[in-house]
Image: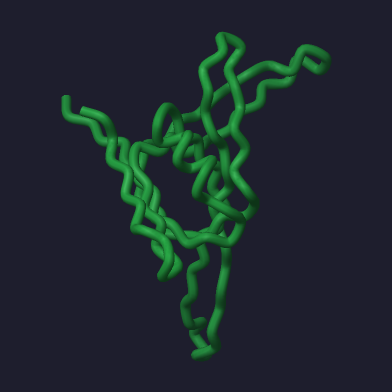
Length: 123
């Protein structure tokens, strides 16, 4: 049975990326992405809302994100959704979080002095 889990986002970083390590020492980078959308209400007024996405980038892509991305940068991210679930040890409550695991990234608002950075997944 065919399946597809693909996300494409264009937005601005909400804060500088944070490089982290797993308990086994594997490095990854996390950052938040704000994606704004606008529409007109039935009366013709302009409405705007922002959706926030948590992004994780692993391997070489994670290293590049940590080095080149800064708060406010406009980027394109492609990846897949992943939902994590865990149980709170004190309250025994179940928690879940959905995030985007990035497979490629492109900086869209480069400065003239910067080279364009496009990162594709390793094959």
